[in-house]
Amino acid sequence: MHLSSLLEHLCLRLHLHLPLSWQQGRGLHASHLCRLFRVRRPGDHLPRGGWRAGQCLPGPRLSGSEPGLPAAGGAARLAAARADQSQRRRPQERGGRPEAGGRPEGACRPHPQPEAGGRVAEEGPRCSGPAHGPPAERAEPHHPGRPRDCSDVLASGVSVDGVYSVFPTHDPEGFMVYCDLSTDGGGWTVIQRREDGSMNFFRGWEAYRDGFGTTTGEHWLGGPGLHRIYTLTRSGGYELRIDMADFDNATAFACYSDFSVGRDSVNPEEDGYPLTVDGYSGTAGDSLLKHSGMRFTTKDRDQDQSENNCAAYYQGAWWYRNCHTSNLNGQYLRGGHASYADGVEWSSWTGWQYSLRFTEMKIRPRRPES
Image 1 (spheres, rainbow, N blue to C red):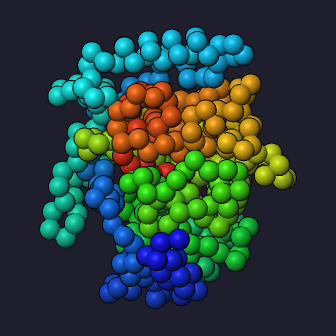
Image 2 (image 1 turned 90 degrees about the vertical axis):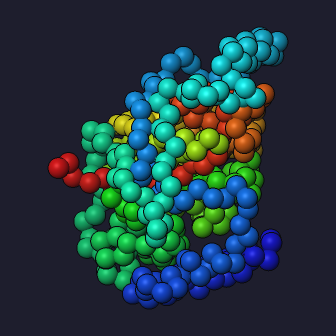
Image 3 (image 1 turned 90 degrees about the horizontal axis):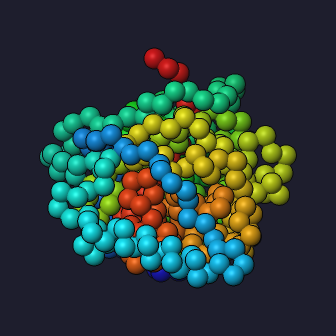
């Protein structure tokens, strides 16, 4: 482990045991202090919440089928399909990226630069899909010093994005998460982030079950990962927002009004942490609904519906079907790429040969319709 990562890890572990009243102090916010230890990289410059100001065009709807795997003896057919896909994209692309004026339909215009103080001038796109699924399990009132998730952190009067300790109903020991308290009304608990390619996401089952990465940087919710997401969403009532950006600083988002992992599972790991998702809205187009009901697959645990391992073939880990329409844990390939569907992909926005610069998956209890 790099020295800077070790120092940040130790700092954040100390932060877990600090009272919320101290964490929300205005001076050196704990997560900001811990982040001083992190080595910044040239590509790590997207302002947190920058898409709040995006002026988005209507997002395209998904068309066609997801890239699958060849049946036995079908490798040649797959190669031909890949070549055909590449030829179809070349007329309007240069180096795998859209030419001037050729941004994919549904792309947001580049977000405006922050004003003094780091804020953007406009109010941005919001999740607006119809409610689906059961309400969030919030029967027990929470202790002011023990927020169940980032929505409770926001309700306590805190408004600064950063790392906080949360204590879900079914996980009283607590763990640390990054809270987005400003985007679309705030209260979001971040469960995944890609931003600079510093973290390897092509990992096995145990890594995704247990979580990995740095809370203030690239990560899959840690300690343990899939099980923490299950703990937060097991009874339903949560919504999911995915913010994304390309290498031209265009931004888009996708919201799902019903999201859970392992809903109603007695043994969620044995069941494969199945995904439940419904109720799309947003500007990126839907690239997740086809994955609903699927179990999580990694390179060393094949639980998809293909006769081969989608995770191994497409260099990621996801709720693959046969195989995917999104691959947010794929390789960080930095924009257009010659390989097929193995990058950080959201196919309804940028197709299967463009790897996104930034993605952030975050959840919060679904709010009552106004």
